[in-house]
Length: 239
Length: 263
Image 1 (cartoon, chains in turn green, purple):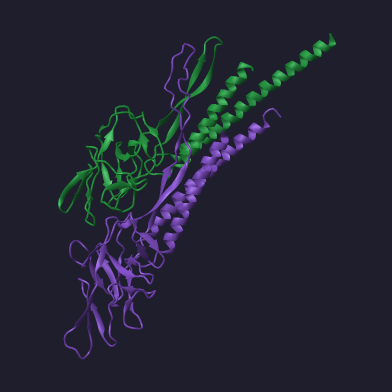
Image 2: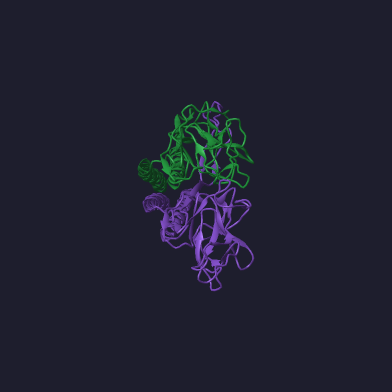
């Protein structure tokens, strides 16, 4: 196949990948603690032929804190900072910005989705005595009328972009967690998603336009090839 | 591959539909005694790791740790209760009881099970037993004699007094149940809740003792549905739904153009 067609096709594939990520962002607008994702593309150089293809390298996350939504539930916490809560799952320690917590029947603080225990600064579960007025301060300290019980762990990473999203609003990373420095929790609220519907809609329109023009380019190339072939055949038959 | 985008947008639309249903149910129960408003929690579906392991960044063989991670959409992971206290509405009926604090009334179901409720809209049955609006008796069965006026104090002690008697007679003691995770109680028709493994076993105490709430006679706990919050949620659901239809439309347009390619 012609190199120009291959380059064009790599662009089309990249745009389709873009569309998938933008669509997924759209679906996650109301998902608590979910970050906006963008596909990063780069040029794949082919020095022998002096052209480059488009290759999707990675999905990067937008790390800005999301808006807080009020619920009034004393076990819901929203974070105005960029830190992560940690949860214990069968797949190991995962991280989330979703602060919708509840209690299990043993009084352990768990996530509302998936029922995973929320960990304290030391990595252990947090047990809260039932049916008492629970106070969660802005640095994560959990206390009742009887005094301080525990402290919710809020973590940061040296390379904050090195995270991968999984199911149930949980993110995994290979980095080691350190205590986050900008933690500011608000009890009775939770963090929504930081996805901006306006920019995502603009991106949709852009992707669509680029797709249309790329397709037109491919159509023209196709027509050029078939016309060339026709002309060559005509010349040959005249000879 | 635009089909994947269509499927993803589909999950988004389906999830927002569930949110819509939940909001409608909340608004329908805006005046239901003891009703707790709900919240739909959305969760990401698994992501597809489109990782071409060891893909080269140039012909010189340098390898980039490619990690293209595409999400597959969203699901409504659960509908949780918002346990905020409802307003106490005065009714002046001594058999209308509200719980000021934590705790649930115990109700005896005809099939032998025990149900729990915050809705203290009680009345006396034909035989004088204190029952719910559906006729299920309040545990322990307390009977009020005809002609007695009932008085229930903060500690759940039920007293009856007729015109003739000078001293009120104690008819019974209402006890309340507490749970480790009241949010995990399973809702049943008629404002009733059932125990589940998630809620934990009931701990039965007298009202006003050991952290249990006290009983307010002549009041009913209203629904904690907040119309402003519900309407705000409605706008959120509608906007998210529109966004998803836009994405689906774009995916459809792009796949339509592929069909025209080469024609």
